[in-house]
Length: 106
Length: 208
Image 1: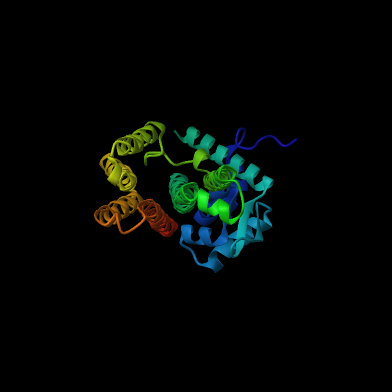
Image 2: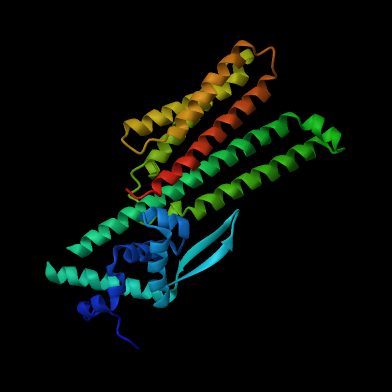
């Protein structure tokens, strides 16, 4: 079994977490890590980005298998973004690695 | 320290999202309560007439209808706040009147207002309930503002509508059915407060 990243080599975690280096992707993952799923329109307005820009970032995260989008029928059709279990694990490892790294710097 | 800035920006976004969820749930809860609460009291008031219309025993009608409506109201409230994840807010510091001692203070204000309303003499007792609700809303609004928490203008709206709309009923009580007028005032004030809160929630979504 792979050793839990972030505890042995924080630098490796940072390398692997390169995908989270963009502010938009990091915030999307942070939000989804805490709230599991968020509407596409809400995300777009929260981040202050255009739909195309957000879509680009979400595609990068989806290609890595960290998020998935699906359409749901509420009182109006909604596009919802969800975090996958892989995404949650990777983000947790990345955040832990960051914390370790910051401790080393201190 | 770029990473720290990234974390701070993300935390600020999550806080705004949680506030948005809370405001929206609060708004919808006010609307639901503004409709269900007066409806329950109306059914109790008019149980005799309504039960005759559908050929039912008045007591059975009273119990069945109020239990059903109150149940639906409670269920919707639970669903709304559970969906807002208010009880498991992740990063909000709960400095905006949602902390337990403050909630207890709010409960005391409302309890005191309605307790005192019970002592209002008979010709004015009906209007006393809406005046009490209005006064409690205004005192709650002022307490929240003075305590330095997030202001809750929906309370101001509810308070003002209750008090201002009660005055004509107080003056011309003999021209209208006071109980129905008071229930209508309640419904209108809560629906207006809820609508304000729901619409206002969107402002938390906008990036600074």
